[in-house]
Length: 251
Length: 251
DNA sequence: GAGTAGAGTTGATACGTATCAAGTTTCTTG
DNA sequence: CAAGAAACTTGATACGTATCAACTCTACTC
Image 1 (tube, helix red, strand yellow):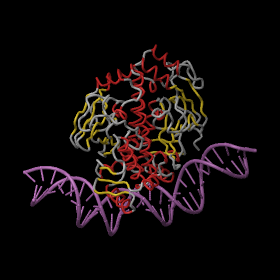
Image 2 (cartoon, chains in turn purple, red, blue, brown; image 1 turned 180 degrees about the horizontal axis):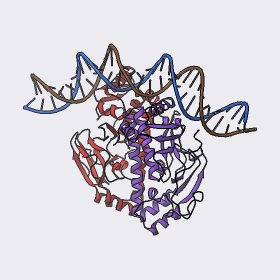
Image 3 (cartoon, chains in turn orange, red, yellow, green; image 1 turned 135 degrees about the vertical axis):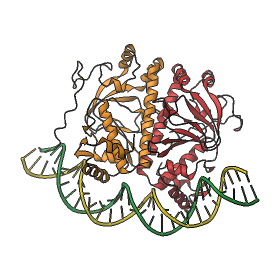
Image 4 (cartoon, helix red, strand yellow; image 1 turned 180 degrees about the vertical axis):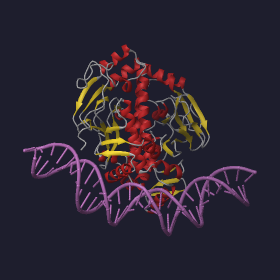
């Protein structure tokens, strides 16, 4: 039974508790991930003006739909969001998982229409950043402009890493790399990167990694009997980072 | 990368011949692909000031190396450029092919270091656009800023299309989609989209599509005996677009 | 808290593409 | 233009992962 996982690792205590979202970007405990470091206090205030904070999304509900008109990008505040692309012939591809502090929705900029749907994997909250106003603001805040160029560039880098994975790596290598990535991202938010709950289903994982659920399940069993990880439903503990890194073949 | 399967905007025909490079962006016959439509004449002039035009690159030479410090993005003027990512364990992944009018090199923005190498597939010429100056200029030209956001976003969209291909499509489907993409992009430059010379080797194609050269070769033979395409070395003619589209399963 | 639908696991088998091998053709360079 | 190297093709076989099937566990619903 993994019904005990509910407790996330402590949040740095600000004036507000975790159920009453902070009222400003400056106070947000995620600002280190989400905002450009270089932004001045006064500049953060101007950004805050345009951000719609803490929009809640129920599990399996969408933040936006594919084909929907693009108007904003989003930051995850709480929970986890997946992005999914459906092709003309009905195939679905999970293109990304987004954790608190991470930005998503930038796929729609090029032709003013989203090319993905964004779906909550658990009850989540997202900040909405209207793009036209962000653009205006970027013109007057060079470091914000740069930050967004960088964000989009790292999205490209992440996509290319996935491309390489899909193209060159075995099922086991892909899974190892995913676990390391998730672990790193939990750590970045001061949560345990050793023991954590995967917010996504086996189906989401397999789809994202270009595998079947059966293969994912088998690899998990294999990694578990090799005592590299321990899995109980969605609860994962990494027992041997060294071996996991070796399998992932990522330095 | 905007090299994959995205649509290209048609080019307006210019007065100058393709072998004597124009001396300004305004006169360049590729400006319809390369530049934001909305840019005013006076604004084009300001962009021209910062662009280093027509830097020549010999076949298999690099425009930039992976890990090299990022300082500029590039537009292909003549020829064809591939981008290649090498992983820590020495695997190489071709991440994109870039044709005249297309922009590449945006992968380096996020951490000021290129994550790919850019290599000429044939003798090529590229325009270099120093990024710091482009950023400055973007701040004062909103439509240029928007254009670059859009360029990066279509790079993301293209990468995600490749991800879907690699994850969900058969070898034959991937090849069909690649041919259609290349065909579309030749057409966009007022060259034949029916009969053309592939600038990349079988090895590049197979690497890009996550296959082996043998498989690529076999598929080509198969498509040829089905009279869907005709292949003579690197010279390709598409005989049956309808069937090709059906195979590619892309509307 | 029982009943049930969905998610996950495990096993047997099939299939697509990789791998290995042996050619042939094309390109490069003196 | 000859000769070697590199690129490409084609065939035989191997292997990783998909598919199909049966089952168990988990999480809702009333």
